Length: 96
Figure 1 (cartoon, helix red, strand yellow):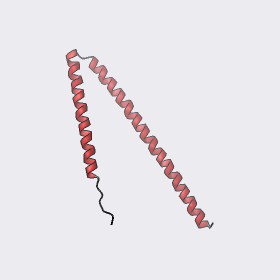
Figure 2: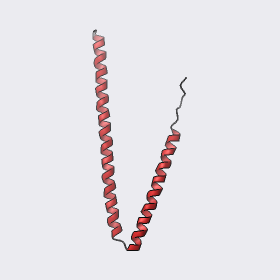
Figure 3: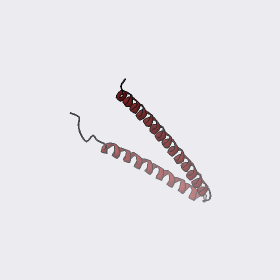
Figure 4: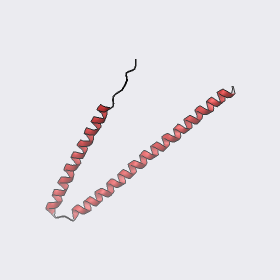
């Protein structure tokens, strides 16, 4: 094998190693983001439940109803946003 062949092989191996490291880092970052979001969600839910518990019975029902409505609206808005993104992503050129 020539020096050029060896250099090309080593470069290809290095590129693969770098890709593997980047993929691993990306995966760990996504897992960390999911964990943080989960912890924040639990903390916020607990805080809301404690706050609701301090209200009168009638106000507790109103608060829970308002939260349910807000949750439904948020989920609907997120679905609409996903649809808009999907529609917007179109190929800019066609392959010939």
